[in-house]
Amino acid sequence: MLTFKIQLALFMVAFILLIDIYSWQAVKTLFKKREAPFLKRLRIFYFILTAVFVLLMSSQFFVPFLEVNKMYRIYVSAFVFIIYISKLVLCIFLLVDDIQRLVRWIVRKISSITHTNKEETNEEQTKISRAKFISQAGVITAAVPFVMLTKGIFKGAYDYRIHQVSLYLKNLPSAFNGLKVVQVSDIHSGSFFDKDAVMRGVKMITDVKADLIFFTGDLVNNKTDEAYDYADIFSTIKAPMGVFSTFGNHDYGDYVQWDTVEAKQKNLDDLAQVHKDLGWHLMRNENLTLEIGQQRIGLIGVENWGDRGRFQKFGDIDKAKAGLPDVPVKLLLSHDPSHFDSIISKSHPDIDVTFAGHTHGFQFGIEIGKIKWSPSQYIYPHWAGLYQEGNQQLYVNRGFGFLGYPGRVGILPEITVFELRNS
Image (tube, rainbow, N blue to C red; front, side):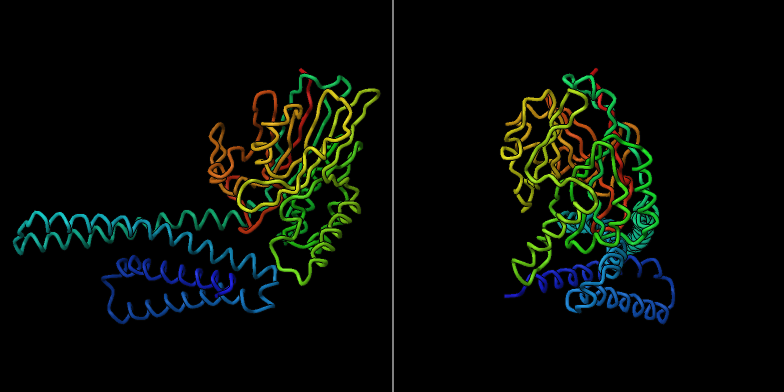
């Protein structure tokens, strides 16, 4: 039986070949009037590029150096991804035209319409003209995702935005009224290449001068050593009342192979130590009280719990709440918003606000005024921003970093600044 790695490589190669063979039809149509030697050279060059793309994508699965090389894995893969997403758009245009022609051909055969030679000539000319128009329209349209996704890498990836949110809690003690809380999520330090840009983002966090800071998971992509190069930067994130953090699904190292179970566990233990070294209080199914004067609110933190795909269900909200004193307001840090959807909103009405991340807003979408769309919404009903369910609220942070595609289009990296209000 073929291993998953080989199956994935074969799928990618088949996808590239299929897209290139089909999109060649558009290229050939655009240069149809050029001489035969030119078309031959163009075809050779076109499919040499296809071979290069196949080699680039398949080699990372079988060449150990490339498999672990971060720049190759992220940016070469992103380059090929952008090229073939754009070509896929072109292929959709071609497919629609082919379907139309097939339907017309079937209709003619069924109705047995006879054409004169002149009619056939006119029809052939119309067909050529239409094919060229479709090819030109497809190429122009395909250029749109190419430009957007390329710009998203060079500009969107580190274009940090501060979101100001007033968080109203009717039972909030007066001593906490006006408290400034910053939330950061999904740093994914293993994806970063621009240390200066990350420093600018962290400075934006520290310049807020928050009373309290929450980090809601995914400090790394897979391994703890990804965080070491950025530990000095993130250690500057501090607040008078503390920085509190949780694990996200990527922090457990479940998406890479480990030589032993012990090695995987050591990686997680090392990551917990990183949180401690940063001065962050890592909350793993536990709670504490935050006090100002004689007034208190509760803070709860759980490990990752997700109900999409095969995400971990390590979060134990009952264990996390155990022993928490009777307080007027309870805040929860939980990486995956589906935890709120499936468990918190249904069985734990005493939790006032859940702070989550995880979705990244798909790193792609539209947010203009009240218009808000992303493919993420088809997977997560709550995917970015503030939501109200009965007397409970959920905030889903769009993420500080990026994963997979090394950029952002429309949905930019977020630093959330909350002001707690009791009226």
